[in-house]
Length: 236
Image (cartoon, rainbow, N blue to C red; front, side, top):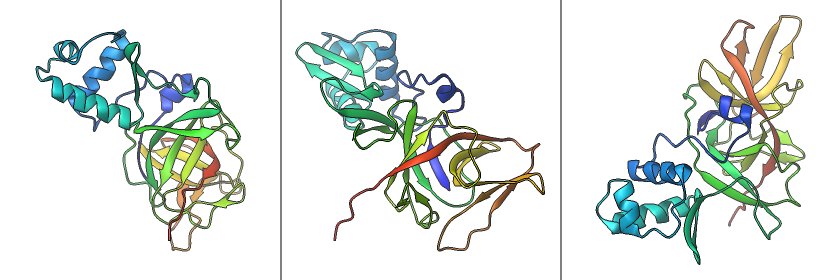
């Protein structure tokens, strides 16, 4: 499974996903704004004052990048009182919704794309839909290379969100996992081949994709187990 997403190795180990590593593809001004939010409150500051903090003299540019961060779901902007805060994972106050970090987009196939530190935003999901509400994150499926895989009765299709349990790093044979091999990320079906003392990461697709065979000495780790598929609507 090709993937561009935040690799949560040490981040998810500590399960502190409120102060997140910044996307390597993010605009420098947006990086600085997030860093300032993490360092202290921006409450009551004007666009010009925020610009001075991040070394940008044009307030309209600050407004643009704040809007971009808000659109991605990475920050919340309140007008009364005026403040900018980080989006927090977990229950959204006064709602039945859970804010789940989106780690990125995944295409099921060979493990050939480097895992990168990149959170793209948050998805809001009803707690009545989620099987688990804590210590989870989401990736978005792209392509058809795991289109025969079933998770809790649902297939993995292009555009679907996969909910990853970051605590389940010791999967059972047959479960679908998010793994990293030599710093390259993939989503596959995990199979422990006891007879040959090897891990097999298999595709589950209408396409012909050979499995990946892992030796115990290889640089390999399970970063979580796929526990749920949130289906994206298909429009005619």
